Image (cartoon, rainbow, N blue to C red; front, side):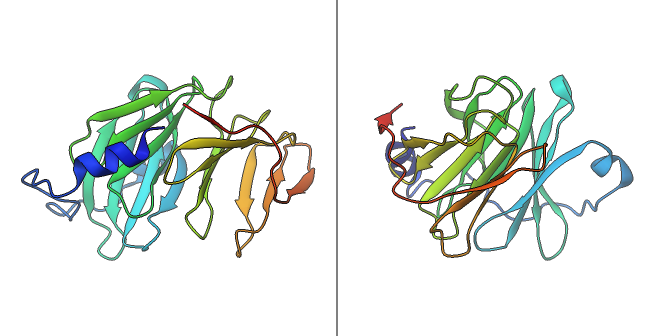
Length: 193
């Protein structure tokens, strides 16, 4: 992932608008009927919701205090989304296994890779902001931030991922009820995409 280049290219720009609330738009029942994922920015100011409706899927950014809509982005097949720490870059996982990086302000697609064979079922950031973990339920991947390299593939199949509060390990849960913990060093090859 070319994260350093993307962040540098966005520095100092004036797109004419920012990630701030627009006209009031509060949550409605239809906003949560197909809700697949909810995450928060690392500063807690923005809530990100993903409506996983296949071709009608969308990611919405909300002001976490006022609950007003900031922006909705249509992205067919979206299943998960989160803001990368210290950036205006939205990482979105899809049902085709793609990881898509979007400019959260303009909605422009910045980069797309397919690191997973199956649909992205979960994505989480480490509390220290150093890693992004992504899983398709079979092969969880650990991405190093901000350089964007694939740091490791975990040999722990599971659909749910959570980092320990100190970022020192990652928990992998499966639909069979298994729970495993991966500890560093994650001793698999590093490669840049």
